[in-house]
Length: 218
Image (tube, rainbow, N blue to C red; front, side, top):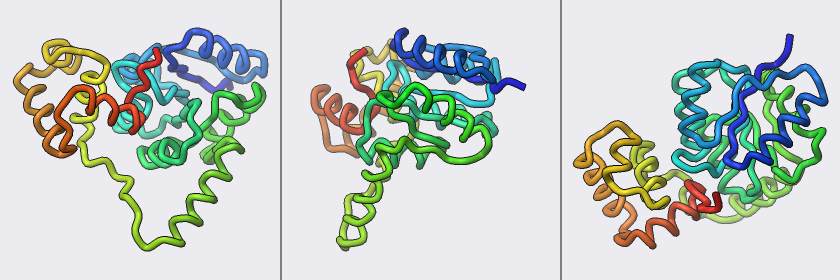
């Protein structure tokens, strides 16, 4: 039986490349494609794939927060993060939110099929280029007594607002996208600025990019 795959990336050429690699290998069925994280959450609910391949940097809702939302409703779906970032912060955040694997976009084409099969079987998967980064980070951690905490000070709801704010959405547009009132959006925005001690859109945008909530490259 074919492994049913949901593919989410805001770049059509990337989706076409991944789809082509899976179809050429055989044993896979791409049941749906999404161009942002919010669509990915909706399609996961509708199609219930075996594996969801999510780009980490997508508009409206990034791959990390989309992963959390998908797994909250469908914990049986295996998530494989697809990213151009090999930075340890992105990898650690992906693992923390429940992703089963992390695949670099510059990987060999044949690595895609192997990664999907691995996470579908219940195993984890990390691109070879990431392993050395994590080992070196572990050595640094064990050699230092103090380390900046990885946990985000923001709640998932606040992270959603921050991403949309960084992408230039107005409070009314954010309220419409999240199905809440503009007053709620403003309250969450104040919580964000208070927690981060960042008070301009430019500062919040830089923080959002640094934390991987958005790349603004779409």
